[in-house]
Length: 458
Ligand code: ZN
Image (cartoon, rainbow, N blue to C red; front, side, top):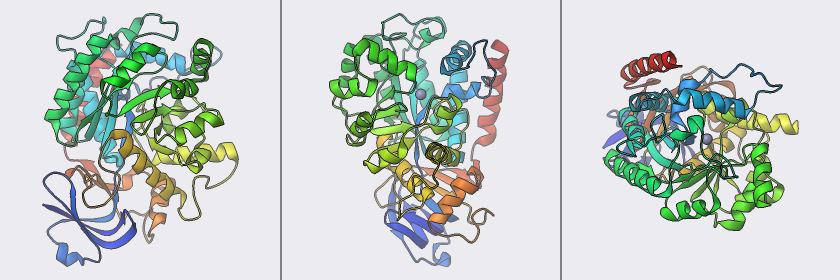
């Protein structure tokens, strides 16, 4: 058994002082006691502010390696998502299984240091650079799992099904051939991924991810959704207006309309982005139990548009946060960017706050709930029986000094940054201590070597 003692902690029923939290060998919270004097808790780790830690619900780990390399204009009048994607495809050709693993371990470490305890990897690089499957078709899925073994992050691995280059069924071309599979090949990748996840740790999960309506023909989507009927199912949807128009032209419906007309969308679904919705589509998601997987920094970086968070939450919608392109790994900045996007659009302040909960508290509560649901992970609250996915903030940090309750979250998210994160536990594994990942030096060395190789190959 391991014990943490916190000066203050946000429990499932609110803030409490002098809190002792015990974790058992299975990585779950076995006891929570309040009003415990520090001397009585001597054996454990002492922290300032203890919170449940969220899951990052959407990541493409390999893209961390191209962060910062796509900030130049192309020859056209406007640089867009589609030109960014061309750079990503060129970069992709240079990856080996080893560099995929080393970059993934590095970005998972950064996620942990930012305060996430878990990550949902939307993993779509399956093949060799020429499009040929590896001898083990799940080779690269196993590399993501190996990386999680190194970083200690709570992993939910979603092998991605990616079959076509557009709604007209055109074949994949260029960098996309590394993503390609047919249904039989995909079934083997899923089995391999599940095998690797089972060996990783009891808290690790797997699921399934049809990439998007662009990349998955309608008949295949039904087959893929039926392959693992109880597992998390994630899909990109309605990120770009170009994609909405293409789906409208081919199916006669907007993407989310078409999805709800053809599938029983429920709480196991996580719809990534949902940027361009009609009010009817927004209500359909909000009342379905599905999670809207928002990626505010990436959506800003790619110029996607602004999700309608205020109305969606008012309608009872569930949302969570993903780092997606991994251009920056910053939990507090994701939450701040989401709220600020609403303010800029509406020209109001504190848009996502409620009369009872401050902006920071509401953002954090919603992110915990949606992240756990999307990851299929029994986390998201500091309560007995839940996985011990926990983050501690340094109570002595200047941004937090003298504050209590929800103001601590507001100060972290709006006035500070993730440098206030002191400790993180993922299913009880103490992976960040004093603001640094416990294996940072080794993971960083492997990443530097991988990046040198990747940049030389460009
Ligand atoms: Zn994505």
